[in-house]
Length: 82
Image (cartoon, rainbow, N blue to C red; front, top):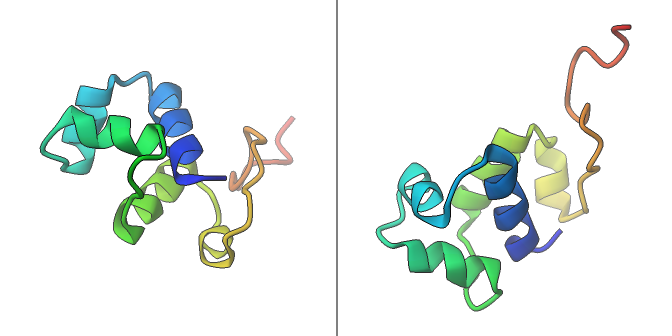
């Protein structure tokens, strides 16, 4: 998953505007979120780790650079609940 995909997918999953996402992540301007989403700018490791945490992706996926599963239950400890 690219930085732009991770940012945009997480933001839309949370139902946030670029401005609200910027505020949540501590960015000063909405344009920084826009630049990440369009691939003009890369996000820092701290922001990437924060987004992985929000989405409940295993940290090893972040370290390995692998594409995390998009399964809703990914990282959910209650996978076997019926």
